[in-house]
Length: 417
Image 1 (cartoon, rainbow, N blue to C red):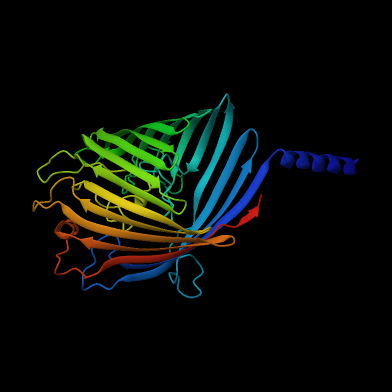
Image 2: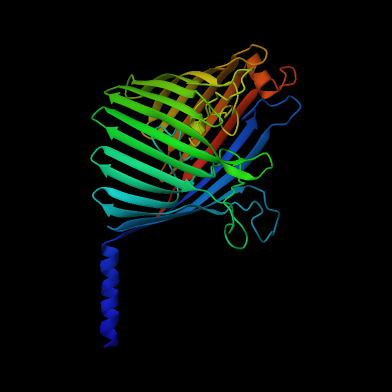
């Protein structure tokens, strides 16, 4: 009889796994960087930075007809950060990067709950920020609907500080975590409709940030609304994409972002691109902020790879006008080379009346091998007077060369599927 129970149990397990899918994969991504003006003008008296960081991820997924479960663990290691025979990780970067469940509700509806990546369209407002070794995630709840080529997401989040030992405080909901637009509350609606050659989306986003009264007591939230659209058209060799977003609220009013990009595949081996992006900023006499900030996007993807703008910087500043052109060359079946030139100026004037900021050249080479890839890049900033003023370094005190070089190995093994 016991053998029969065991056989029935084994049969039940076989049926369960036959109806489900389990995946286990990983990522190993070391990156070497030479920083001689990355992120800001480097003074002549300063030595360039050089180092290697590694991202390691282990991802597991489990899918059934009723739900999907996914968890991703990651650690970010800088080579040499731990002294020899140290029994613990000194930078304390090991974390759960994602942990969510997506439950089917029927009739095209589902709900996705937990720590997750929010990424939409070209990642201008919401993106996974995959370039950063740590990436970007959100603790949120989504109600999702999809039918044919139409989709709609409603997202909700409420952030709370950790309190030892109860997990979070038992009295009040003050949220003291600040920096990089960390929000106390978030609500958004995202709609997307696709046709044969055209896709359009609408985003309505509200973020609430902890507000304090004159006695430094928590007093509700300051809210910022971001509303806009992303449009994408592709037909044959031609492509066009546009962004138009408006920002308003308790601490900002009338801020905007406008972007337009064109691509043309001139041959099987060459793709050309050109575009313009205008991001509103503050003038030197403003009292209310009119400076747009792209919040939770993959900002490294835009406005130059050297990250001079909107990557933990350039908030409430003079805005930006970015005019750019690029060419991507297919060198072989598994390799490519991208060259991009970007000219920057302020949307508003600096205190001196200067607007011109400079020109950046970005070059990226990609090569895929059998199961792994190599990506390398070089960037150089040709700063104008406005850039020195903006970054607070005089031209005489700045290094003659402002450049950045990097190389990255990417291995994504599939352990089990």
